[in-house]
Structure formats: C-alpha cells, structure tokens
Image 1: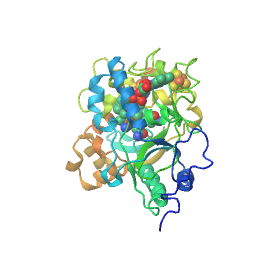
Image 2 (image 1 turned 30 degrees about the vertical axis):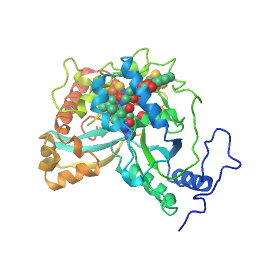
Image 3 (image 1 turned 30 degrees about the horizontal axis):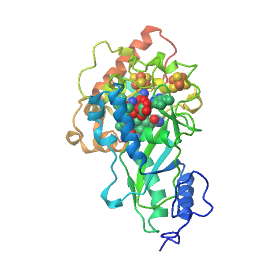
Image 4 (image 1 turned 90 degrees about the horizontal axis):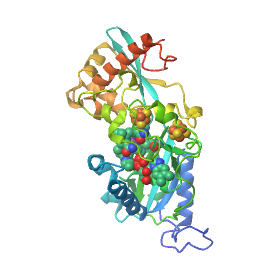
Length: 349
Ligand code: B12
Ligand code: SF4
Ligand code: SF4
C-alpha cells in the first residue's frame, strides 16, 4: 500500500508553531493510533536531540551532574537511532501508565511480598507503542524504531511532562508512575517545537518538599534542580556491591529501585494503587534468587520468570536487595516508626 501523503506538500492550513511537514494525514493517523493504544505523546524535530546533549553538557560544566554518572549512562543518554530507520526525520516520545506491582517470595520464615516499582516491567509498553506506530507508518513505507536519548528531558522539552523536585517526570492525568520511551522515524511528520512553552517544573513543587524530606539517602536538594543521582537508593540497589556506609537500613522499600519520593508526592497520591501480585517464586526458586547469580546460571524456570518481569539484568542483586527488604520490614515491625507499609512485609499482613 502506498501512502497518499508521501511526497505530497501538505503544509497548507498548518497551525502556527508547526514546522513544515509533508504528511499531515499520516501524522494525524499516527497520533490517533498512539492515543487509542493509551499513549500520551509528542512529536519533535530531530534537532531537539542536539539541544538535549547541550543541556547535559552544560549541567556537567556547572558541576550539577557528575562526569562519572554521564559516562556510566552514556549509551542511554547519547542520541542514536537504529540503522534500519535510515535518516531520522522526527522523534516521538510516548508515555503510558505503569503501575507498581508485587512479587511473592517463599522464604524460610514464610511468604514475603516485594514491590517492583513502575517502569521496570517495560517490554509490553515498548512493544505496544511500536505496534501502534508501525500499523500506521509501515504501510506508508516508513520505519520507526526505539531511539536512545535522555527520555525525561525529551518529554519535558516537548511539553509532554514536567519535572518534579524529585527529578521524576510527571505527565498530565497520569502522574509520575509512567513508562517513557522515545522513538525515531524516517517519516516526515508534522512536528511541533514547544520551545519556551510552559514551565519545566510542576506547579505543586514550590510550596512542597515532601520528596526531599522522605528521600532515604537525602539526594533530593532542598533548593536547586538536580538530584545527586549517584546517591539515589535506586543507583545503589541496581548496582552490585556493599551498601554505602550510613545507608539507613529502614530505607529499603522495593525489590529494586525506590518509591518513596513518588509515593509521598501529593501529585501522585491519586495514582497510587495497591500493587497487584504478578508472580510468585516458590521456596526453591526463592533460594536461587537469594544466590545473586548471573541470569544464565539460573535454572530455566527461574530465568523465565525474571525475564517476564524484565528483571534478568538485575539477577545478581535481587537476593541482596530481598534480604535488605526483609530486614527493613522486620525493623519496621519493631520500630513503631509510622503506619505499616503495604509492601515489604510478610505476605497476608
Ligand atoms: C541514569 C538513570 C537513572 C539513574 C540516575 C537518575 C538521574 N536523575 O539522573 C538512577 C539509577 C539513580 C535512576 C533512578 C530512577 N529512575 Co532512572 N533513568 C536513568 C536514565 C538512563 C537517564 C536519566 C538521565 O537523563 N539522567 C541525567 C539527568 C541530568 O537528567 P535529568 O534528571 O532529566 O536532568 C534534568 C533535571 O535534573 C532538570 N530539572 C529538574 N527540575 C527542573 C526544573 C527546571 C525549571 C529546570 C530548568 C530543570 C529541571 O535539570 C536537568 C535538565 O535540565 C533514564 C532513561 C533514559 N534513557 O533517559 C531512566 C529514567 C529517567 N528513570 C526512570 C525511573 C522510573 C527511575 C526511578 C523512579 C526508578 C525507581 N522507581 O527507582 C528512579 C528515580 C530517581 C530520581 N529521583 O530521579 C524513568 C523515568 C520515568 C519518569 N516518569 O520520569 C526513565 C525515563 C526510564 C524509563 N524509560 O522509563 N535512573
Ligand atoms: S513531593 Fe512535592 S516537591 Fe516533591 S515532586 Fe512532589 S510536589 Fe514536587
Ligand atoms: S528514588 Fe528514593 S532514593 Fe532516589 S530520589 Fe527518590 S526517594 Fe530518593
């Protein structure tokens, strides 16, 4: 099938602020498909990628982001579009709700539920976004693929999201429990340059510092805009090794990652749900998890369960994290430090 828009000069009647595009009909169809599949989204010119790189370089020069963090995540943060797409013409950033879920482990003492925060389980969202876009673009002769780029920054720069003080990106009517993904296409879509429109910061932040106060590692500044990513609990529990000295043992709250700055955020309050149980590891499988082995050294069944949760890459830290979580739950039940959490506690409580 050929695209009626391909090659046609379709700029007549274009809304002000839109860059010259060739395919308004295709753009509308793409937007419709993404919306129908549940994705809030923005279409941006590829030139935005260069701008984002400059913003990160400036943050490094100002000492707001460390060189080591940028180096470590360089592959994710440097714009690249798979060769199959050819010359990219537009960027697409898509967001969809991604609820926190829980998994059950069977420990010596009995069952124990642990939360997996929003966004770790991501294969489904990525596949659904791609399928929605391909259903429109491929019949028209265009390609689309997942791009590497600083996704939060892209979402905020394009007006899709706003930063919270916690540096997490918030989407209107979705909050921050959202999966964000970026895509590139060779389709000459109608893109919009949102430069200068709207605030980058959530309006709820100035009078509120809940996230700063609740952060277990103190990495969210009282003032200032950028968190200390290498102090974030998520950074530590996604990496192998010992816990840093001084880390509050009560701070552990998820199997991997951390939820406190989102869960205690007033903007997210309406989006917090009781996590659904999505998997269970029996006694023997739990013992394998506690060994912190590389995924390829795990029995096939355990590995498959981790793969279904998109957690294979964390198999060498999950046992350590689970032990820390169990310890935190034990401390909480004896410390009288507030109401019991819905997670990180013996199942059935
Ligand atoms: C590296 C990384 C991490 C690192 C470092 C985090 C960090 N802050 O840099 C670690 C491991 C700690 C981490 C943790 C988490 N991450 Co992470 N992470 C990434 C990754 C790979 C790159 C992030 C990045 O760009 N860092 C560089 C910094 C400098 O970028 P930035 O935070 O956008 O910087 C801007 C703000 O600081 C900003 N700013 C903040 N407020 C304001 C206000 C104004 C007015 C202005 C001008 C600027 C400003 O200034 C900077 C730019 O100007 C992305 C995936 C990707 N490819 O983008 C996922 C990603 C950002 N992570 C994600 C998630 C979900 C998380 C966690 C919530 C996971 C969890 N539950 O534990 C935590 C949250 C930690 C936190 N509070 O930020 C999601 C974000 C979803 C969302 N809704 O925002 C992403 C996009 C993954 C995904 N595809 O869904 N992460
Ligand atoms: S907890 Fe308060 S300060 Fe932090 S992101 Fe949410 S609204 Fe902003
Ligand atoms: S994810 Fe946890 S450790 Fe990281 S900034 Fe938020 S509250 Fe702090």
